[in-house]
Image (tube, rainbow, N blue to C red; front, side, top):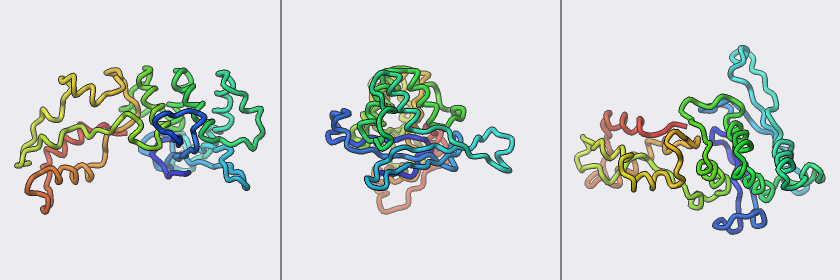
Length: 261
């Protein structure tokens, strides 16, 4: 399956039993392409090699343009950043998983292949660091992205790669505030409900993977203010049939508390 883009270069595995993901029950793969107009990192697109008979993906080539190049604005130069087959096939070999590159070129990059890749990413920080750098297609990490160096942070990302169904990624999205704490009169908003960092129980809910304080995982919490407002409207008595007007001050507080990608 192919998915447009998430402003990153990634993929997700489909399992017959998503609660117990293994290489044996990996039945499919979702390829998530990068963006030509990304929110961060270098612009990129993919070229897929597909078997004309089985329609299995045999390889994909990540094509990028370097934003830092002095000629980018006038004449961007597009070049191949990496081949998935060569890069991840070599990873499997170097980590003693299997000699994938010795297999016929018709061997697909299927769910089983990518699950084995995630096993290496889970166990090896050097390999994970290379993967993490590919998310921005070789560009420097955005200033609001912090390192992802702990085992817990890697675990979170591996869960994402193994979770084509979000209910199984064990890392639910949080909007950064509790809608239920908004008073009927939404002209004021309790600042305490925006920041629960002093509440250990709240920390455990927002950070189930125990990420380190100075660590980020590259994910944004929720940048869709429109959906947030709709959610708020459903929780505010007497406003379900009216247009919800969110005060500018509240909008600013919401934006300041939503981590951007």
